[in-house]
Amino acid sequence: MKKNKGIDIVRAVAIMSVLIYHFYVLIDGNRYVDHQVIHRLILVGGEIGVTLFFIISGYGIFFSIDRMENKDGFQFSKFMKKRCVRILPQYYLSLLIIIFIGSQGFVLSKDGIWHIVTHALLIHNFFPSTCGSISTVLWTMGVIFQFYLIAYFLYKCVKKNAIIAMIASFAFTIICKIVIFHFIFPYIHIENSYYFIYGRQLFTALDNFVIGMFLAYYEENIKANKSTKIVVTLMVLILGGIWCIMPQADLRHSDCLIGYIWSSVLALVLGAGVWILENIEYKNDMRWLRCVMFISKYQYGIYLWHFVIAANLIQNSLTINELAQKSFLGLTVILSAICILAGYISSITLDAPDYVKLLSSNKSKQ
Image (cartoon, rainbow, N blue to C red; front, side, top):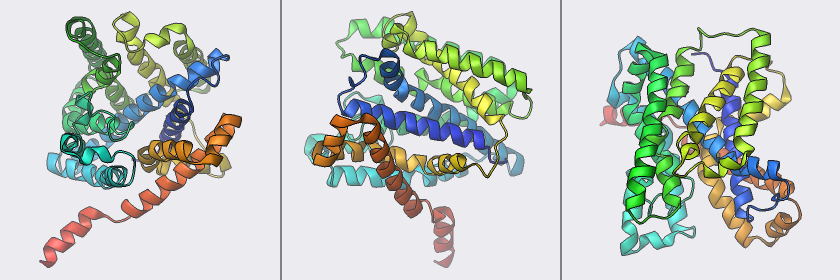
């Protein structure tokens, strides 16, 4: 598969949306409360970023499985080994540093071992007590890893009938939310955070991944002329903007119609945006594109480290704290640069070696 610059742009947009959202929340989340459009767009930025991550995960995994199918046939063990080599080194390193050096040392206590075990097994997103206990952002890794476990089944469904598979994923996702929010939560004592936690599990975000697979399946078959791209772009901007800034967006994780469908509609709109970006031809000599490609290439490392770095600097650095009081834009630029550098260093350190080949060569020597 030829590298698609449009998808790389989506990755960069996703990570920057998440960064801006977390920086905003860390300094109180009310800086632009008098400017409701800006305020709401930033607060929805986390949802936009995570939804895009799920969509492009589905997109990339579809092609990964498709290549295996066409070459030697799909092998689950080989597929999972490749996924683990890709995500686990940086993931486990971030856990170790946060636990032993960061502010989450409490998990080393007797009562905290459960937090370490669930994070190590990538099932921490299932439990409210562990979902964000070590790092606020790591819950997504559990969801994505669990997606890998059923990815081949979803791939076969999309290959058989992509349209029906996508419609079924929307229905399944919405039904799961109705059952959980309306028929289970009213009968148990819960906090408001439970709505978010169980509204963004694999079974309540399945449509995000299937949209990505749908786009990958039809990448070569659904092309658009210039006028179509313009029309769809305008629709995405208008409908997406309205959906994100309307007052009802505050109900996106709640027991009501908006709560059941909000994330699915957002995923559909963002999926259309991804389709536009992947169908645009980009020139290699554009400077802005080089910066975007750099951020995209190291987005995983940036994602893992950004929240811990930003939280510590805002809490402990007098200079950063003063900057936060003066200019959110300035803060965003400085913290983004630091987090991008950290993601780059982490990635080139842990992703550079081909661990599969290294392990294979070591076994052969023995």
